Length: 418
Image 1 (cartoon, rainbow, N blue to C red):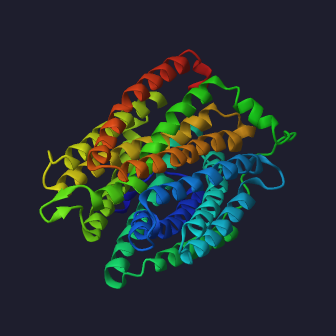
Image 2 (image 1 turned 90 degrees about the horizontal axis):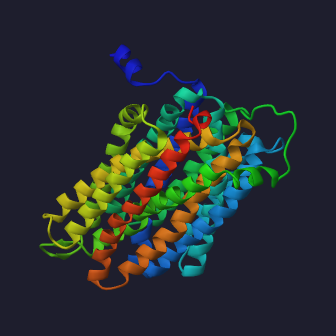
């Protein structure tokens, strides 16, 4: 049994597993609120779906600022990876305090702004740590391991959050648990992870690294792809729960109950955890753009299944949404480790933080665009809400075209495909 476990798990630096453990704990807290917060603020606080979408979009706006600062801070001698990570955990915990007491739209937006800024500081620093301590050939699997920890943590959080809501109906406790998880993450990083920033002969000024990154043609092409991918992920987390709760046809009326939604999204997260490492290994021989094409096709199929369920073609609704979430779990796990490893491959060693900040900014932009558009669609007629998913599926076609261009450009620069 132990030998089988060793064969299944990649042999990586001990610090990867420590970082993964910290991310697992913090993701448990995030799982508590991720799928339930939009439902809570619409049904209990009384905000409209558009307001919730705008609030989540404001998180992405402050996330852009956090990612911009976080990339340069991560590469700087004063801040480095470790201090930036610690600061992000404290700000995220403060954001949960604000959301805990939120009763109106302005306070809801403030909490999201703080959360976005904290998360913005987090991503460039944590992904730079993984790149620093992992050989190039193992990076996809290293990112898969930390994403696996994310998925397991989210799964546990979603399950426990569903139990808490079904037994107490006290949604605000979810934010308290999330805040505590960030403080635990702070403690684990403080005591177990030392600075991993490579020694450099000289430090660039704050803007010099950004000048290099923003002149990298391959990186800029990839940005257009990544923004669309991250907007897809945003739809799962912000738009789809509300859509499933209010629009999909059921025998008793429109919408699946919260208990069923909890089961479906828990299954989505668990499946993502189970297939994360196997998919990373299967896609490892492919060039990065081709691996992303696999993800894009899965997204298109998943959105098509949501649309078919919404118009009543797939029944029962729980089966249709379950199939869609399963396909989108495959899409997500094919995308996340490849995306980060690709950017690290493009980045000069001294600019990993800035390059990964650009990668992370795509998440912020995707979350800035995706939730408001999805929220607007849900505030319209059922026909518009259903058609939204068909439009999302069709958007995969230009995405595949850009990935094909990126694959050809990368093949023309073999020194960057190592």
